[in-house]
Length: 493
Image 1 (cartoon, rainbow, N blue to C red):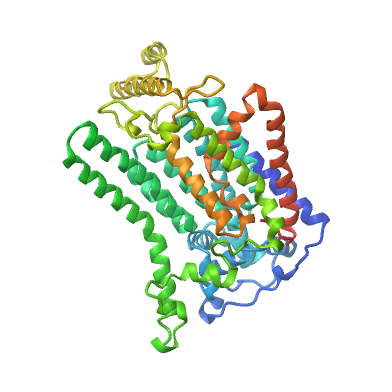
Image 2 (cartoon, helix red, strand yellow; image 1 turned 60 degrees about the vertical axis):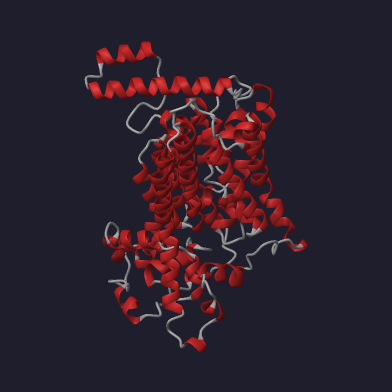
């Protein structure tokens, strides 16, 4: 999977380079780059040699820094200088700055500091994308128990309509990799690692905080198991406290960043000279910036002149709605009950998932014994594999008893898909009702549910030919148009 996703990145970067070579950018302001406002930062980040060895390479890299990439590179070099720059979360600029000062520092005399910052962002995000594709494949196997569907879903992600942003200096790649890796570890019982990953996703993008919902879902099921199934209400308290603490840890990056912005902007002035948002009961900088500078708000985008942007977002919103309906219809009772009571007594929801370190697909007892005699020498590993094989059998039985079988005859795990349905639904509603709706294409691009549904559709004989063709045309056209428009400074999502 690493090789396949890496090849797609090379193809996209080649496509972007060709578009940049053949066409002139609509706006050439990318080359206008004033020094940092802070003299200390300007001196620290000055190029060591004004006579660059490869000025054409430097010019190409600097010219490719467009749209929001300008903010991220500027923050990486100069810090947060302006109020509106606080709309861009710090994880990506910090990583870019660290790479430019360490791994790529020897290139500064060759191509210049700004070009090195851009190169650091490109390398970082493309590597993150490759690992995101890999972990979408692994996560899909854990939940869907179908390697063919998982592989197709990860390939669809590699060609997702927002691909140009994953290979540019945007925060989508870091958000996606930490979200998906966090989910993989959550289902593999590595809750501490999952908490850290979700917190880092929140340091990359504000919607990373929504990942706390997965811990809420886990805690809800564990509390239900303790109170209803095990009849020990006292066992629910540590579960709830642990879940609340993990959610708090996930919120820390967002809260800390808002506090940092408040101290930098508001505390510089006397109380009577403060900006209005600073005097609010809860001074939320992010909300102020989104509303004041970008006009983000509930139904604010519902204007006739924005109709083309709604049309641009229609395919991905339609795909999100169809994926939600598809999985809910597999078992409405299980979905609307949030899966409570769907598993036998004394069986926890996440106990059925094969954790990291074991094979991606469940095995039959016979094949397990054969492999044990030849390759498995560790008794502990053997016991774990037997337990997980037994767990998968139980999951299959629960799924079949609930009537949760897809049209292709494959067992589905609706309980495990429920939090993904809720997450995708909330994000789709937010994109449609609150945000600039055209951003929905990249806002929803990290949702595994979309790729699972699309993969199932393309493997269903009765509809695969027509809808599968439509899905591939949709992805290909957005990649072609997006790489053309975005790289040449034309508006695109």
